[in-house]
Image (cartoon, rainbow, N blue to C red):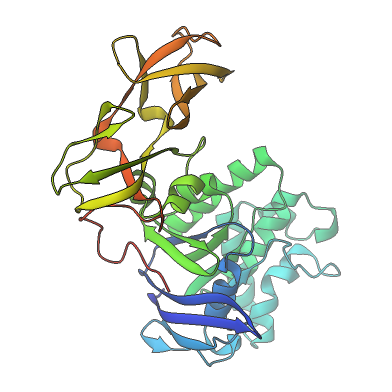
Amino acid sequence: MAEIVIRNLRKDFGDFTAVQSSSFRIDDGEFFMLLGPSGCGKTTTLRMIAGLELPTSGEIFIDGEEVGQKRASQRDIAFVFQMFALYPHMNVRRNISYPLVSQGMDRAEVRAKVTEVARILGIEKILDRPVGGLSGGDRQRVALGRAIVRNPKCFLMDEPLGALDAEFREHMAEELRALHDRMGATTVYVTHDQLEAMQMGDKIVVMNHGVVEQFGTPQDVYDKPATMFVANFIGSPSMNFLKFHGSLEPGATTVQLHHQTLGIPASHEAFDGDMVYGVRPEHVRLSDDSAYRAEIVATEYLGTTQIVTLKTFNGEVKARISSALPARVGATVGLNFEGAKVTLFDRQTGRAIRSNLNEGMLSHG
């Protein structure tokens, strides 16, 4: 398997820039997620790593070798597509074995490798069946088998579970992560689904308009969003944003919102101007003792929890609280926020205001 290093990667299509000066590293054996909305540049980045698109500028290293201008066939990678791309006139065995047969591998060795891959994927009983009659999940396993059988340096996957229904997609995500752990493969996986990225990834790159907004572990990206875009894109419901104007001194632990004192983490830089107080719904508490008041405008029952929507002077707030707690539409309540979990943002740039951003977590072109 291999480490993949991306340095200042850029891709232009005429006057349109799809990827802007992206830089990040994928460690050997890592399950790495490229996450973002449609059109953000994640698939273009994956295709450049694969050699299906050549970069306008920048460097791509796979296992220490610069491969940016090499053809896909020279990179020793395996690509798994959303639509499976199986050969419909071949059965399962021939689909899986095709990469080995095309390389001229000995028949006995091909059979042994296909048998081993089928065992890993649990598809031994369908090896001689035509692919046309298979379920979506089985066809996905066949597509994975065809990639795995070559034992490449890395696996590149472009929304491979996107064509499956929601329930089976979650099951296959668990299977795919377990398969990755057994093989110790370097895997780069494109998705627009933030829940999928958080569930499966060791590291996540969040992209927007061709720019890497942030990369880090799922917990880092969730707990310490580098930009308002990341804070809004990750999480369901997304982070609450309360707008205000004020001044910060380094090390301050409170800010003033609508004449109320609210807690913040102490680690931030000095700032004066328009800010945003960002807090996750699970870090909002309803309290009669708080002077920061809000009106309940909606509730959403989710079983053990409920989402309560509240109107404040600084903007709308959603709170995730226990369903056992009373929350009546029209009632006025106090709000408390877990200050240590709050993120402050510069309203003009959208960037987090803090002095301890981990090196490499934020990258703008």
